[in-house]
Image (cartoon, rainbow, N blue to C red; front, top):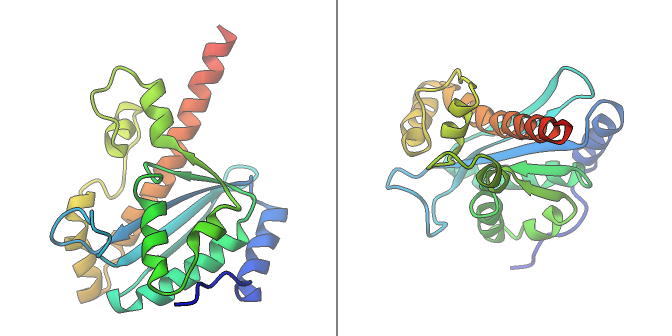
Amino acid sequence: MVSYVGTPPHRLSSLADGIKRDALSGVVAFDIETFSPNGFPYDFRDPVVNFSLVAPLNGLGLLSLSVIGDVDLEGDMLRLLYGIIHGFHGFYLLTYNGARFDLEYVARRGCLYGLNFSSVLSSMRHIDVYRIARRVITDMPRCDQKTVERYLGFTRAMGHISGDLYHFSYRRFLQDGSLEPAFYNIEDSYGCLRISDAILSFLAGKRRE
């Protein structure tokens, strides 16, 4: 299969470039969800069915992009993701444990559709907030995202959904159009931003001491 590394559709890249120049702060958080009813997808066989990108504005505000769809639309969704990421070239890309999961997963699944995600992701500067949290928050036995968010006092609107139960919520999207799984995924991306901001504030305070 020939790998797709060309320029994505003009409308996608120009849209992101225009937003970047005018309003965004140069940081975007990213998270994916897979349809994995049989447990964690260690073998990369489960399809990507949901992804989100959340970027802070230059001021009090957020840009939130969310895509969710049927398993049969995985190829179209990943092509869309490829174009969107291309439009954010040069940004800092924040993930939570994305070095071990999200980024490798989209790269592996993208290969099935001729998409070279490794190439387009190399245009961004990746920061894995999970790795930073493990170094900074030393008094926690676990550093999974929800545990760290609770430690920092953050609450979620979709607190009743978790990664291992996501497939139940996703089925409700397929059955009756419930957007709860999409909101959960957005909160994962947004939570990554919140944790990074809290860590930066903590480190800044330590430097002033």
